[in-house]
Amino acid sequence: NVAVDNIAMGLQAQGVKVLRVGRPEKVNKIIEEITLETALEQELARAERELKKAEQKQSQDETRSRSDSPQPAEGENGSEGDGKGKGKEKGKSKGLTPKARYELQMKVLR
Image (cartoon, rainbow, N blue to C red; front, side, top):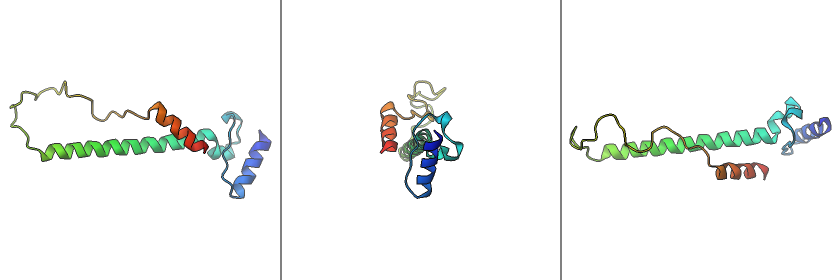
């Protein structure tokens, strides 16, 4: 493990793109940022941020389109009240699907 860490550090110092694969608890903390686990965590976090941004944009677009359309007068349609039965809850992220997670893992390994 120490020898592999030393090789990885040397390659990284030379400007070579290195991805250290192995048991995370055995990796030197100095090169923790180039481990497979760290790379996957960073890529998943980036993808989840992009997904949340897309969901927020979609939500904003839906809100705008509803505000642009004529609204019925209060109480006309009988659906005012506690908000039950209005479909999916707002603000709940679906997260990444298993397929999307797998594709991200393969992207990191390339």
